[in-house]
Image (cartoon, rainbow, N blue to C red):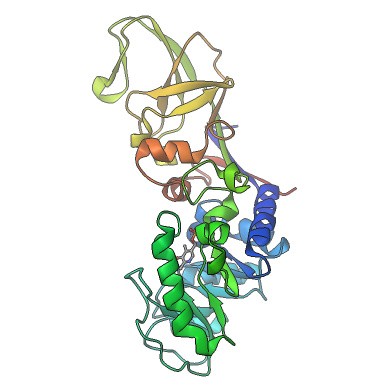
Length: 336
Ligand SMILES: *Cc1c(COP(=O)(O)O)cnc(C)c1O
């Protein structure tokens, strides 16, 4: 397998699209594939999402959109982040999220700031002719539904006269748990990938993780009491201790602050010990295991949500940082 292998299961992604459609009760699902599909591969994930019934693609930057346009000649592609590259956007037949200034010659979605405190206008003017959508973004759909409902009410009031335009508010968390956020379409990212927007067990919301990450023990050795492993001698054996070295490190996206999390070695949970290096980390074993024993870094029993809690971050950040390509983790895409 090389040093490690990331598997992207597009069957799981299609199942997540179906699950979101169920939750959305008739509203459109727009697939958010920014940041290379949250690290899962934008083009593969976009194709699977469109196949399964998503009706548009959403990204953050013009460059991301132009890449998708190359693969999907006819798809609706919305750039949600602010941009000055209007000419490029027109040429690539993109749609843009905008604030005060409405560029001409392409379809735009006016963004209202109802409480996120970031992009968007606070008051809606009568929409120009090329405005096709009205949108807002929720700050707390995953954590404070009461505040999210206040944002939804503000949006609803401000846009009531323009209900003929496509109104879209919900992200994944709102699509799954706030029916009043549905409007005409929902922009879903994290849930497409089978990851929980709530940082909990994704299965609770009927989602199936798309990404798994495996490696193998590259070295197994026994530490005598007082021996250490890794930089800074942060792990010192207090008794005879078997350890395994996994050839994956922070340059692969296995962050330094994942020391203390667990991975599966030959199916058993083992703690990551010592400091994570650029190209490897160590696991404590309770016995000698053969070199080549399978290591599951992310997969059933060791979900990304658990690693995120250990690292003090969110699954979004871990997923977007997993490094694959010709020099790091090998990527395998399962189409079925
Ligand atoms: C990233 C993003 C989303 C998707 O959020 P998820 O929590 O991943 O579903 C939706 N809307 C906007 C404006 C975004 O930037």
